[in-house]
Image (cartoon, rainbow, N blue to C red):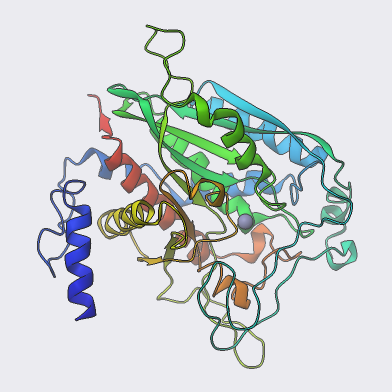
Length: 401
Ligand SMILES: [Zn+2]
């Protein structure tokens, strides 16, 4: 019963977006036709390129906001985006002056209720943010991460693929480039940042056209409460859809059609065991968790966007499925969730699973590149395939001959 209702709902939601698929309950999603341009674009994603971009980010250690290593990472990201042809790369500037008592860490909810809603079930492992430099055994990395943050000016970078038919409307694909915990923030959120950079690379190909605009945003200050995303909204919300200068056909801030955040994409080894250990391998049934927040003003629209991503995953992702959950939380999509359709993609559900200790590297010194195997990186690649498939379809991507 439940699956039939689900299939019927899914069918209605996606009809019109994916005319070739899910037309009747229980139907297999039709494989993309051989000449599907979105399929060609998805095939331009590559595991080794994705890994190299994650690796590139790890040279800046944990990239904690308000430090030289964070600023150097922004410069490096900007240079990469420009090298892909994703220009101009622009910056948002804002101030971050936290109260002295405020620290970055955010926990896992209270009692059996997870952050964002949902129930904590089963075996739970430890969570928290490492603040002890000596917990990092790699002396070089410890030294790299040593500079503390100072309050004051902050920046982050974004670049934009301008749509040819509807430049005045856009989707935002985001990830946060800051991290903490005295590791390399390889997974949280090097994995999401690299994913969005890889999307920028593919969509910026000289032969790629999209009907609508796509913005690739690498937020800062997510770990301290999404101050980067909040600054973007404060500075830009009122500018949406305005042509400037008048008659130029240019829209510095296209109307926001949706915000898709990518955060901690690699590690889905399942629930911790009773003895506190974890499976060493990616679990074969690993999935990409697409979440929306049911208690938000745009819940209906965000849910619809999430199901579109599920269909895109079935159509375009090579290995791992997606699942949809209703408790999106602690993410740069949060500040958008009452304004526009907003979802997040993660390795696990943030509240019930990561919040229960399913990722032992989370905000820890062990979140370094060498912790992860190709099976882990492949989950991140599948999330990239999912988002590229969904956004490519939603923006009418084509390839010019
Ligand atoms: Zn994160």
